[in-house]
Image (cartoon, rainbow, N blue to C red):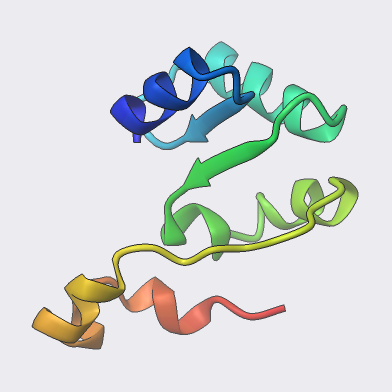
Length: 90
């Protein structure tokens, strides 16, 4: 995620990611940017998307599109690769 975000930012796209590699203040900044519409693209894990703590932020943000990545991993290793993918629904 980090490399993808850096490449996007280098091309003028307001991108960020949320995952466990970020410190709490870094996570807060990304969530704040999402809430205030300062992001064009946000990468996050299916585990984060499926968490109850993340849902209020998603509901309050203006989101135009969801894209699910790593489909190639599911086709290669099955749904047990990351069970949280099965929980993604809106």
